[in-house]
Image (cartoon, rainbow, N blue to C red; front, side, top):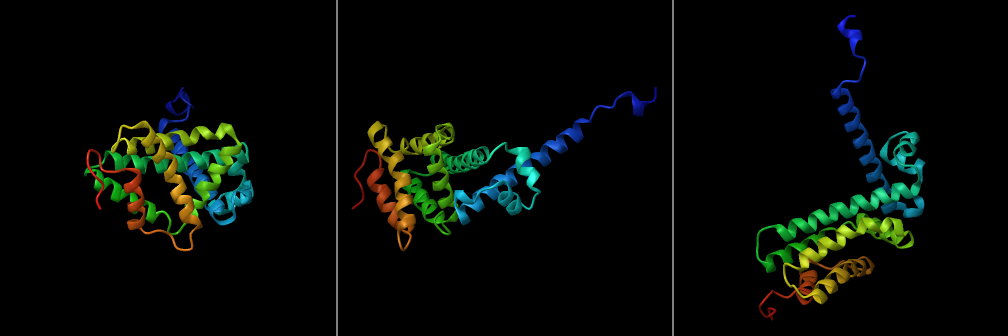
Amino acid sequence: MNEASSDTRTSPAVTDGRRAKGERRRRALIEATVRVIARDGAAGVTHRTVAREAELPTTATTYYFSSIDALLTAALTQCMEEDSARIEALAAGPGDSAGKRRSLALLMARILTPPGHLLAEFELCLQAARRPEQRAATRRWQEALAAFAREFTDNPLRVKLFTQAYDGLLLQALLADEPPTADEFEELLRELLPDPGGRRPA
């Protein structure tokens, strides 16, 4: 038996290449879903519209996602993972409390311009409010916010206040005629998270 016919199994390199291609396609579909929601709302998400946005065949969405709910859950999960990673990086990064608070204010102002991605995230969270099975995706987000707050305080009530107020500040910013500036966000954050062990600046 010659070498070519002795082993017909797929080589690891081919398998890894297919897996990588599959991951790229899956991510492209998730990112396309977020863009569709940002433009048309969650009601605009169908297998066809997402595939068209991703420039992939419609069969790709049905291959990687068994339903629209599965696609929305994946989009919410990815958004929460990315948002959590940014907040965690701020909490673990260098600098004192004032510097971290300023960095968060700058981040809040930046994600509002343009607001489409943030609008999509809020729509996805509202979908999760109606579907308990999707809420697990938001847990890491709440944990990331709590970890950031604990850089300032170990008071459980103040930590809870910050984690619940943060999204509210962004939602109100979306409703405003003019989005708040980083300075305005920083002023609000200073009330929520005063410098630990010291008085708030006047």
